[in-house]
Image (cartoon, rainbow, N blue to C red; front, side, top):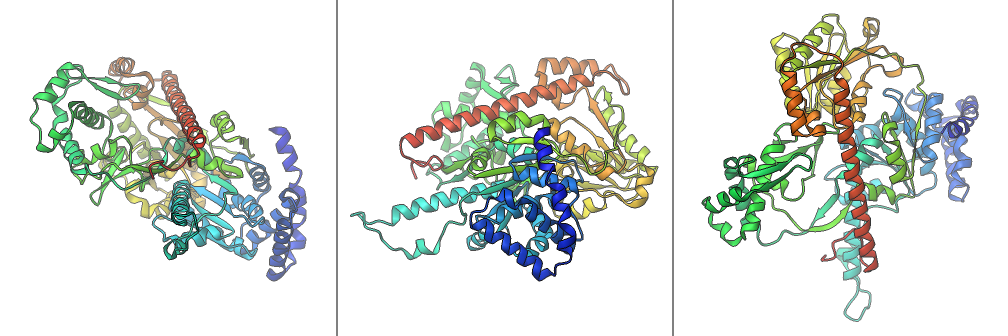
Length: 631
């Protein structure tokens, strides 16, 4: 790694040295230089040979249009990304500006360059922010947004540089495959002769060949999101009403079933299995007429699913109800996962539980995982603030290296001692007291929580103490930019889910630095240490001062997830004897977190293996591995 960094850093002085000459050029002549590079790239000259000239042009364009000139560490990061690395840059080091370097260089080849980020808001924000830089060099910029008309999407993908989300790009890839198949099937008559079709001619695939992809927040998208396959559904079947009745009936009846008496619950695999007494209770329970059409084994499954949902899926933590619909909250980003649904009937069971319209399970027409999508790109690179802990997995699956980039200024954030409490109530009261104490000094405070309900619980505690604050969670996504922009001001207090942990940059007011900078409170460990590191990274940006403290409780969810119910219950009982903060037991929490991380890693490996086997079988049968064979 050091050898590669040394090799790439060798081009940095040459890029900087070209600056004075480029500054003397008019805007017209700068654009002409860019068009000259484009001609050379499209004539077959390797992009590696154009790197110094291209990066120098981007640096000068940034200085002119944005009043932002790339630091030398950003030039190094851009070179590493061009050569297929996941670059690890600390918060506030300017990943958005760094991305313009490899994106411009890749776009010179005329085959398109894609940048994927975690949501539509960030994709549009970054594209609009960097647009003047690209346009000054003669490049066009496109943005992919949810519910965008197909012609507009086609235009965005035809641009030199395209910003969007992994989900949108994956769904567009699948829609294009389905469209190509329908065109091929409808383009020939019974004798195999080609036919013209006005309808087919008017609808065209939107994507070009997949050339270069730069993934922002790479660890979140390539690892956390990779567990969720993207699925396009075909038309629903005929038994919708029966299924809806079954989901609603099971949701009403599940409360009658008790653990150990009627069913067993496997905490490790999160599985519900009815016992003999439970099956007897199902048979004895009055049923609505539609259920007569279903076999008993299927009705057992509906009850098991309803019990599982009642136990595991919590309103305002895992999902919210909005306009009569269930919308998933993505724990890794804290944002609403628009358009996504849980599989295997879980989504329908939640709809029945919350009393909204049950949207029926549908057949699968096309399917791809995030892993598959990105592996189809000719070149792949990424950026993040926290990837070192997942370097092995990224290298093994995606054949990319994680390359840490030095900070422009040395980080000076301080870690305060971790505090462990007997139970959650003590912990939340202590967090509110800690916020009040720091707030009294005038320093801004950011509190990170795992879920919407916990952010709102803490908000009430702060209200009781008379502390003015703002709440940032999936309910307030429209005000995200405005709230984050104010979070570094004197005396500000923000309570946030993971939305404040990714893609946002909290800048400090000048007088705040003298007081000690931003104070970050981590209220609970997440399922991945990378998410904790993202939250911590909100303070101490660009050499600013800052502090952070971790609060833990003996009934935290991570202990149950990591150690299972028996040991977690023992730890919880032991915690009841504690009053006030304790010390020395935080290692337990990190051990539990590590167990959960390993389990998720195993799940991702299994999913990847199963997908490869499924695709291999479909290819052997001369079928498209991404489309349902029944289509």
